Every structure is written in structure tokens, then in C-alpha cells.
Length: 184
Ligand SMILES: [Ca+2]
Ligand SMILES: [Ca+2]
Image 1 (cartoon, rainbow, N blue to C red):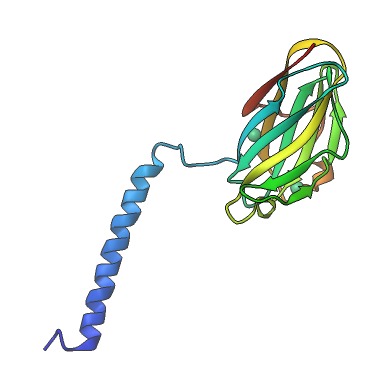
Image 2 (tube, rainbow, N blue to C red):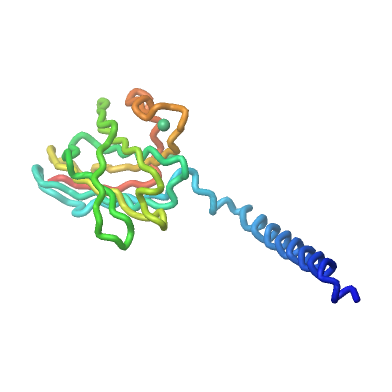
């Protein structure tokens, strides 16, 4: 009688669904404890190819970027002044796609020791899988060993206009990834 009553059997199904989802939730909850899953702004890895160049030559910097925050990010790049950014060489490539999207850093500022580039990027620029790379070229202008090219992604604050969101006097730079370039 109860089983044949569609209302009762729906209730039973609902109860089962609730039980199943609470089990799933608690399983996910345990997993969250190791903190590894939380991505603060994006996952980045910098690689420069080639890593040894002559003065006047260029190296191509590839910043593998994934899991970009929904708000978008400031992709901050810092390198020593023996290297110089080559204008009009920066673009994004989505993983497994050939299309290049040209991008331009909103900031290209220097202090005594470093040059800073800041790109403002949104997750949609990295395709459906939110996975791709940012590419640009640097030119060697002075012979110097082991120059660092460092990357620090930060979440774009929607309440701050982007053109006011970086200050070279207060770069708030803590690198997530470093690549080295030697200039002979
Ligand atoms: Ca950061
Ligand atoms: Ca902003």
C-alpha cells in the first residue's frame, strides 16, 4: 500500500537523495582540510626559452597559467634590468588551441633594480578549461648571469579601477614561480 502510493515513494526518494548528498558533502569536507585545493588567484609556472642568450638576443618567457580566479587576475611579472620587455610580443594561447590573443601590459614600470609588467587577465581568456599560457619576449641588454624572471598573480579587485591597482613604489610582490636567464 505505501509502496504503491506515489507521494510516499517520492518522499522516500527525496530522503535517499538527502542522505546521499550529505554523505557526499562530508566526503568533500574532509578533503578540504589539506588546503591544497584552494587556489588564491591562479596557478602559474614561468619558463624562459632559451635560458642562455647573448646581449641583443631575445628569450621567450612562457607563463603557464590555469585556474584563474573568477574576478580575473593581475599577472605581475618582475625581472632584472639586464633584460628589457619587447613591445608587441605578448599574447595568450589557450591550451591545445593554436589561436593567439594579443595582450598588452597595463603597467610597464621600473624601480632601481627591477622592471615590472602587469597584465590584467580574465578566466574567459583561458578558454573553457581555464588553462593556457601567457607568452612574451625579453631582450638581453647587459651581460649578467642568472637573471630572475618572477611571476606573482593577484586577484583583481573589482572595486579598484585597474589603472590604479598597481604602484611600483609598493609592488606587493611575492613570487609564485621563478625562471632564470643568463646573458653572456
Ligand atoms: Ca599573489
Ligand atoms: Ca580592478
